[in-house]
Amino acid sequence: MRLHSLPYSPTVPQWLRTKALQHDNEGALIRSMSKKQRQEYYALVGRNQQPLFDDNYDDTVCLDERHRQAMIAYVHDNPRRAILRRMLPDVMRRCLHVRIGNRSYGAFGNLFLLRWARKIQVQCHRKHPATGQPYEETADYASERQQWEAAILEGCTVIVTPGISAGERLMKNECMHRAFPLIHLQKEPIGAFWKPEHQRFDACANGSLLILAPWNLDQMGSVRGVPSDTDYSRFHNLNALAAEICAFNGEARILRDVYSD
Image (cartoon, rainbow, N blue to C red; front, top):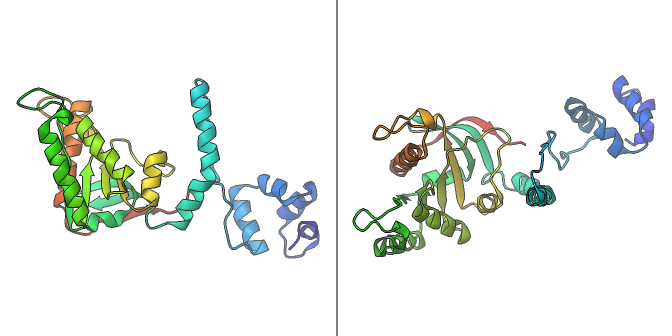
């Protein structure tokens, strides 16, 4: 059905006839429609695909030139990200509510990583308990890291970590750089329009990453008398959750799924 014929077709609703008379090209016509009208229009004209861009928008006040350039790069990369989300739904999956054991999470990425046979937690304190050195600079850390990488290369092994301390962060980044399987726990909630930044987005696209955001992290309880909404308690509570994930061998239950953006 062509644009110039819309006002005269008996099958076209009145609202669309009126709008079609006001515009001389389809792009302008579609931009004038509400979300519900666009859905009706695509069904009417026989489109079997959705438009590339999302219905909602993000308005941002740029604080400086660096922020402005970052937003320009984000806009330029948006079409690629949208295409990847639609081409790879199994590994780019966003779920608002996943039940893992007795806890609830938001999730983004490859949920199949939860089924892997061996899950290894990477937990590192900031200082070595005996020497007081930064832990990531010690021989103990180097030895542990060799063991983690050897286990990954053996196969069927996924690293689980919040990536908070320097040692955890180094291993998390190594996993993403080398496409090693990784389950990353974060404190930020995952909502309907949440998306990971570029590096984690690409790791999700190649199927090597699952991001989990626990519900009510700051209500998990204090650690050693330190309030639960502090970085200290979040570090310990996220690592406690990482240990639970490693011990989990059941089926995650998806209670609320979000496929579209």
